[in-house]
Length: 481
Ligand SMILES: *[C@@H]1O[C@H](CO)[C@@H](O)[C@H](O)[C@H]1NC(C)=O
Ligand SMILES: *[C@@H]1O[C@H](CO)[C@@H](O)[C@H](O)[C@H]1NC(C)=O
Image (cartoon, rainbow, N blue to C red; front, side, top):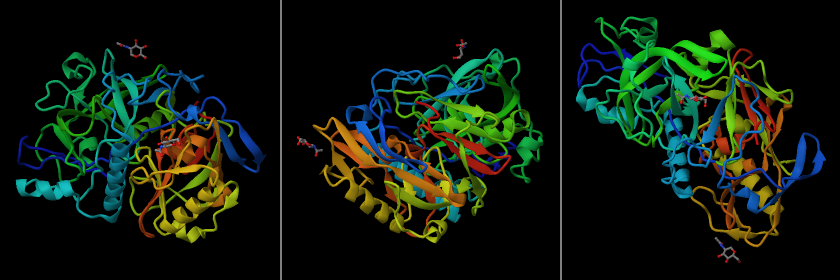
């Protein structure tokens, strides 16, 4: 995401506080791929129907370890609120309604940022005399995929959220004037022999805001989210250990001293965005420009994040990255949708109007109203033999599978420019609250000009390859269980 950073000549309320605005958010997974996910009627790029055991749609209470990490360079990625999470305080998992409400907040934030409207938080803070760029943060609260990395020397293990909608990474640091309560002890810079503050005037500080750094002081950052969450601190460097064979000796991140908001118990947030400060951008010179991740099928399964794209699975189908009106999101050209192998009959221009981004932090894919209506009609026709259930927040097409052993649902394909057709996993078609309330996992953008978003429900189990060097995005089926 776009970010600005200013050095402060004097910390505290005045002076030019550095401002970085990051995006945040969202996630949730629901089900589980196990059991009878037998596919019927193989044809073309994938099955036209999914036959799944109704019970297997719900996450298990025990963690199923990944069958095999793609290679030693991968970091394990898990859902914050499931049995695979390293956070013990997961009893406070938000309800599905809360998750979906926060998801809509994230989507609204993304839309405002793309539209260039002033952030609520910018307006709120302006009277304090703080000069902030008109960047928009995305409301915090549902960026629920976390990874564990080692920071410093000796390395301290920290559990952090990952977000393609953010650039600057940050962790909470000791001493902390005002931090939210995290599970692990705070990262203590004094105990790391490789830690250093980034001086004002260093390119990393300056490049984000040319006006900053008048005085020879520490470079500070401030991340402001749309929902009044914020993270403030010192820009620093330290050794980052991602995996056994992946270390960055001089990783630039934010050492937070004043953070509040919907961050839960995590130790920080790592940005996977397109900007120069993001983790993949910093890793690019060493490992190549690009990264991939696989979001697990459910909170009781494991996925991964890997840097460099050399090891993209052989079955990866690529589509070109597209240009969008801003530089912090990853755009692609969605041109069509198929249900049970049939086009829903919406012209590509309908999808092109608002453009399409892929976001790790948005839960539910948003489609233009006409496209969503056509998808829903086709889906409802295919599901005529099942009992309907009440709507679940923004999901208006739900079913009651109580008493069903197996359910047969139509496949959904996303078609991208160049003909790349991605056949979604059954868990990418449905959003499962309970067996008696399982919904079509898509929603409308609300108007024809808003950006479409490919959300994380639909990305689950695919290896999603962000091949920045070749400017393309790939999807490899069966990337993780
Ligand atoms: C950090 O995590 C790694 C990988 O899970 C583990 O091997 C190592 O022992 C951990 N280190 C500490 C200090 O807990
Ligand atoms: C689902 O169906 C069962 C069995 O008919 C019924 O008892 C239950 O109330 C229904 N639940 C919902 C959410 O519709």
